[in-house]
Structure formats: structure tokens, C-alpha cells
Image 1 (cartoon, one colour):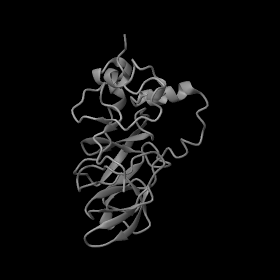
Image 2: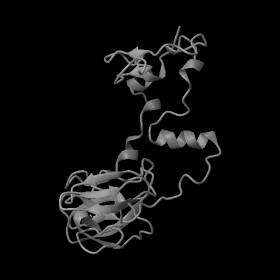
Image 3: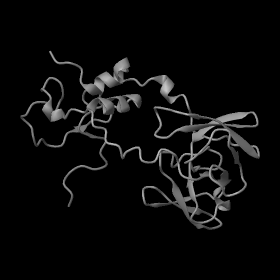
Image 4: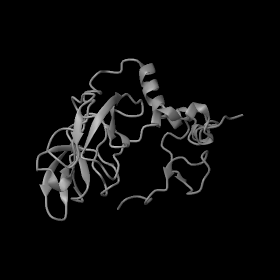
Amino acid sequence: MGKRIIQQARGKGSSTYRVNKTVFKYKLKFPRKLEDEGRILKLVDSGAHTCPLAKIKSGKEIFYIPAFKNMIEGEKILFGKEIKEGNILKLKNIPVKTKVYCIESRPGDGGKYIKSGGTCGIVSGISEKEVTIYMPSKKEKKFNPESRAIIGIIAGDGRKEKPIIKAGKMFHIKKTKSKLWPRTSALKMNAVDHPFGSGRGKNPKSKIAKRNAPPGRRVGLIRPRRTGKRK
């Protein structure tokens, strides 16, 4: 008798495949309205994020943002004033070649882009209708000049330089973010454990899963944009 394949087990939502809720309790975004300045209350460690977080108080508001490099507890940051690390300004007021992170997709959404440890974008062009940012992906993206961003580089650079050495360490890193690791190849499984199981079909024809197929059948090409041989 076969067992539930991994897609089915994850879909059920047991404790094995469910992330700890306390890990994602911090939401990284700054409020729509900010006072003139804020104070860094505390630096927080979060397993769900690749950088330390900063707990900031501005007036009656308390919010969390990715900490910038060399941030200190008790330090003050300004909103809409002065080009200095940690300050939050509108993109139209930030000069070219300035490093920024946590950029708003739309004015007032609290920051959606560039939030991973050790990363930053660079302001590469400013016009009346748009501001161009050179992203960590080495591509340029255009933003609304009214969108806000934080000046500086996110802390946590070099986190990938130290080798992981033990498989157990990687397992716990992935488990913190509710990611399955290690992943077993479907072809290496038995036929009862996966639709691709057994060694009979090393080069099978592409399997196209139906759009509304249940998790156990939803394998192979899932909702492909196109099928067939390219001409």
C-alpha cells in the first residue's frame, strides 16, 4: 500500500510541514504617516528573515524595518530630511548614486523591494515622472518619485560566505522558513510513492497536470504557458 506523497502531506498542513507562527510575527513595513524623527528601541533577531530587524518608535507608532549596516540601539533616524543612513525619504529627494533599500512599490505601502540581508539598490536616474533604481539583480527598475525608501545597506552581509558543512544545519535553516529539505528526486522514489516513481521512465514524456488536479496528481508541468516542441 502506498503512502501519501509529499504534496499531499504538505497540503494537509500537519506540524511536520507547517511553519512556527511565532517566526513570522514581525511585519517589515513603515507606516503611511511618519513624524519628523524616530528612535531605534531595539535590534531584533528573526529566524524568518536574512537580516537583523530594527524596532522603531515614531510618535505613537511602533514598526519594524530591516536594520542597516552599523546600526546602534538608541540611535535617531529622520523622516524626509538629510541624506544619512537609516533615514526614510522620497525617491525624488534622494541624489543619484545613493544606496537605498526597502523601496515602496506604490507611495504609502511601507516598502516592498530589497529587504534581504546585505543587499541594496542604487539610484541611477531621476526625472519628473519616474526614478530609476539599479537593483541587486543587476537590472534597472522604475519607481514612482513619491515612493519612499531607506538610505543605506541592509545588515547581514556575508551570511553565505561561511560554509554550512553539516546537513543538519541546513535542515534547521530551511525548517525555520517552512521549506522542505532535503528534496528527493521523484525518479528515485518507488512507483507507489510518486507518479514519476520507479526507474522505468528515466526520460518520460512531459506530464501536464490538470489545472484543478488534486495535490497527488499535481506533478510535472503545472499550468504551463505553452507545450510542444519549439519551432
